Length: 239
Image (cartoon, rainbow, N blue to C red; front, side):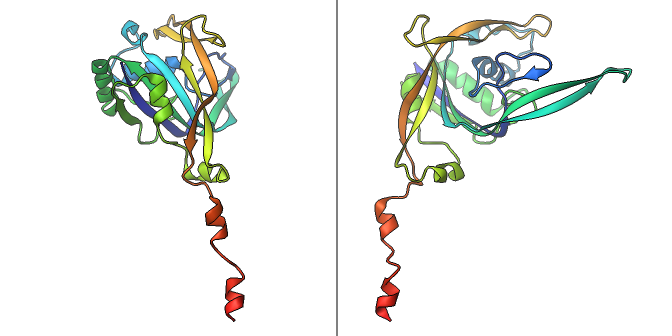
């Protein structure tokens, strides 16, 4: 097995696994249903087309830059204009995630080609959230999902790295698919059976959140030597 790595970064993202009309929530990390939907869109599949072959991918996310929750509201009116509805929608602002897909190498090559040249527009949860580049980071041959997520350098923006400049190493959480019954695992209903708009169906998958997922180096860290190299009194002594 190999792993295809992706970068999910954008000003806004939204990953809802359970929402109602008036309240549209977002998870703190990308959902598997959104990943499968992105692959299907990239390959040019219609909502009525089968996605059974995509359900076997092993999916994982590393939270490189968690972002902040923000809320927006939208208004809609009936055709006659007599009744208005307000919906509250939550987004993640300035988030960056390292996303991994583990599958057979030949299938990953197809996914990568489709994502680089998608048939339909790609977005991060909602149509108003297009991804920034780069989206595709490449295939890590003969690396399982967890190893690939642990080996990639930190993808956070410079401003976020500078906020942690006192830390030489930064701990990043990893959320990953695991077999049912794994100790510490939990269920989330974001595994789609069909995207057909008249009868969408989802089932649950087993996930594990490893808060101490991996330690990565912070290239913006301020070392002790960089702090003490400059002697502010040296100029006075020369005078």
